[in-house]
Length: 119
Image (cartoon, rainbow, N blue to C red; front, side, top):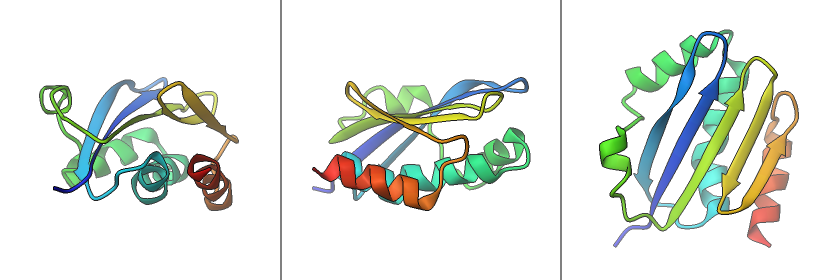
Protein backbone atom coordinates (compact mmCIF):
# COMPACT_ATOMS: atom_id res chain seq x y z
CA UNK A 1 0.00 0.00 0.00
CA UNK A 2 1.38 3.42 -0.97
CA UNK A 3 2.07 6.02 1.67
CA UNK A 4 -0.37 8.92 1.49
CA UNK A 5 -0.15 12.56 2.47
CA UNK A 6 -2.66 15.34 2.90
CA UNK A 7 -1.80 19.04 2.85
CA UNK A 8 -4.10 21.92 3.73
CA UNK A 9 -2.98 25.11 1.97
CA UNK A 10 -4.20 28.32 3.63
CA UNK A 11 -3.72 31.55 1.70
CA UNK A 12 -4.44 35.04 2.99
CA UNK A 13 -4.19 38.10 0.77
CA UNK A 14 -6.14 41.18 -0.17
CA UNK A 15 -7.49 39.35 -3.23
CA UNK A 16 -8.08 35.86 -1.80
CA UNK A 17 -8.64 34.38 1.63
CA UNK A 18 -9.28 30.69 1.81
CA UNK A 19 -7.87 27.21 1.73
CA UNK A 20 -7.63 24.22 -0.54
CA UNK A 21 -6.30 20.73 -0.18
CA UNK A 22 -3.71 18.47 -1.74
CA UNK A 23 -3.85 14.69 -1.36
CA UNK A 24 -1.36 12.30 -2.88
CA UNK A 25 0.71 9.17 -2.58
CA UNK A 26 4.35 8.29 -2.41
CA UNK A 27 5.56 10.26 0.60
CA UNK A 28 5.16 9.00 4.15
CA UNK A 29 7.16 11.42 6.28
CA UNK A 30 6.80 15.17 6.86
CA UNK A 31 10.32 15.69 5.51
CA UNK A 32 9.45 13.84 2.28
CA UNK A 33 6.22 15.82 1.86
CA UNK A 34 8.01 19.13 2.38
CA UNK A 35 10.92 18.18 0.12
CA UNK A 36 8.83 16.77 -2.74
CA UNK A 37 5.47 18.55 -2.66
CA UNK A 38 5.13 21.45 -0.23
CA UNK A 39 8.44 23.07 -1.24
CA UNK A 40 7.22 23.35 -4.81
CA UNK A 41 4.04 25.08 -3.68
CA UNK A 42 5.87 27.44 -1.32
CA UNK A 43 8.29 28.46 -4.07
CA UNK A 44 5.52 28.82 -6.65
CA UNK A 45 3.54 31.07 -4.31
CA UNK A 46 6.60 33.16 -3.47
CA UNK A 47 7.53 33.57 -7.15
CA UNK A 48 4.04 34.28 -8.50
CA UNK A 49 3.58 37.90 -9.57
CA UNK A 50 0.06 37.71 -8.12
CA UNK A 51 -1.52 35.04 -5.93
CA UNK A 52 -4.30 34.55 -8.47
CA UNK A 53 -1.76 33.26 -10.98
CA UNK A 54 -0.60 30.57 -8.56
CA UNK A 55 -4.18 29.60 -7.70
CA UNK A 56 -5.18 29.38 -11.36
CA UNK A 57 -2.12 27.24 -12.08
CA UNK A 58 -3.09 24.81 -9.31
CA UNK A 59 -6.63 24.59 -10.68
CA UNK A 60 -5.43 24.27 -14.27
CA UNK A 61 -3.25 21.28 -13.39
CA UNK A 62 -5.91 19.66 -11.19
CA UNK A 63 -3.60 19.49 -8.18
CA UNK A 64 -6.19 20.42 -5.59
CA UNK A 65 -8.98 18.37 -4.12
CA UNK A 66 -12.15 19.31 -2.29
CA UNK A 67 -12.72 19.26 1.43
CA UNK A 68 -15.12 16.32 1.01
CA UNK A 69 -12.26 14.20 -0.36
CA UNK A 70 -9.65 15.61 2.04
CA UNK A 71 -11.55 15.04 5.31
CA UNK A 72 -11.94 11.24 5.11
CA UNK A 73 -8.42 10.67 3.75
CA UNK A 74 -6.57 8.13 5.88
CA UNK A 75 -3.16 9.69 5.34
CA UNK A 76 0.19 8.75 6.80
CA UNK A 77 1.18 12.43 6.96
CA UNK A 78 -1.08 15.41 7.51
CA UNK A 79 0.50 18.83 7.26
CA UNK A 80 -0.29 22.38 6.24
CA UNK A 81 1.09 25.41 4.48
CA UNK A 82 0.09 28.90 5.56
CA UNK A 83 0.86 31.95 3.45
CA UNK A 84 0.04 35.54 4.29
CA UNK A 85 0.73 37.19 0.96
CA UNK A 86 0.19 40.75 2.16
CA UNK A 87 2.80 40.42 4.92
CA UNK A 88 5.02 37.95 3.02
CA UNK A 89 4.87 35.32 5.75
CA UNK A 90 5.24 31.62 4.92
CA UNK A 91 4.99 28.59 7.19
CA UNK A 92 4.90 24.79 7.01
CA UNK A 93 3.46 22.78 9.85
CA UNK A 94 2.96 19.22 10.91
CA UNK A 95 1.32 18.34 14.21
CA UNK A 96 2.32 21.00 16.72
CA UNK A 97 5.56 21.83 14.89
CA UNK A 98 5.62 25.06 12.88
CA UNK A 99 8.46 26.10 10.60
CA UNK A 100 8.38 29.72 9.48
CA UNK A 101 10.32 30.91 6.46
CA UNK A 102 11.81 34.25 5.53
CA UNK A 103 9.86 36.80 3.54
CA UNK A 104 10.43 34.63 0.44
CA UNK A 105 11.42 31.03 1.11
CA UNK A 106 14.49 29.78 -0.73
CA UNK A 107 15.47 26.28 -1.78
CA UNK A 108 18.30 26.27 0.77
CA UNK A 109 16.02 27.44 3.58
CA UNK A 110 13.52 24.70 2.71
CA UNK A 111 16.34 22.12 2.53
CA UNK A 112 17.44 23.17 6.02
CA UNK A 113 13.89 22.64 7.29
CA UNK A 114 13.77 19.21 5.62
CA UNK A 115 16.95 18.33 7.54
CA UNK A 116 15.34 19.50 10.81
CA UNK A 117 12.32 17.32 10.14
CA UNK A 118 14.50 14.29 9.45
CA UNK A 119 16.16 14.52 12.87
